[in-house]
Length: 144
Image 1 (tube, one colour):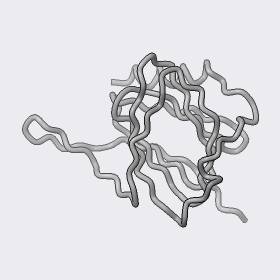
Image 2 (image 1 turned 90 degrees about the vertical axis):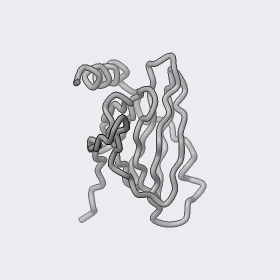
Image 3 (image 1 turned 180 degrees about the vertical axis):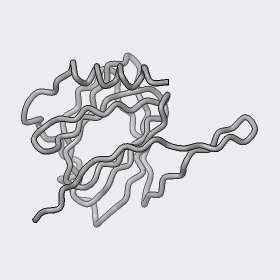
C-alpha cells in the first residue's frame, strides 16, 4: 500500500514583545525568498527530494496543488500568517490576481540531493479553475 502524501496548512502562532511580534520559527535545511509576479499563471512543479514550507510575507497568491487528480486552491496572504507544507511528489503551481508581486519564504527541507527534474515546469493536465482560485482567495481575505 502506497503512502499518501498530502499538503497541510497551519496558522503561525506569535508572541508579542513590545512593538514587535515574533512568529513560530520554521526549521529548514535552506531558506529561499521567492517572488511570485503579478497576474502569474504558473505551470506545475514537482519536487522529488524536498518538502517545501511556504509562507507569504508580502502580498497574496493562490497555490494550486494537484492531488488525487484534482486541483486544490490554497490562498496564502501576508494578512493571515500560515505555513503551507508541500511534501515530495506533489505537483504545485502559483496563480496571482494581484497587480503587485508577492514575496514568499520557502523553508526547504531536503530528503536527498536536488535533481534537475525538480525545477522543470510541467504543463497542467487540465486548466486551472480560476474562478475557484479567486473564491478561495476572497474567502481567505474575509477572515479577520
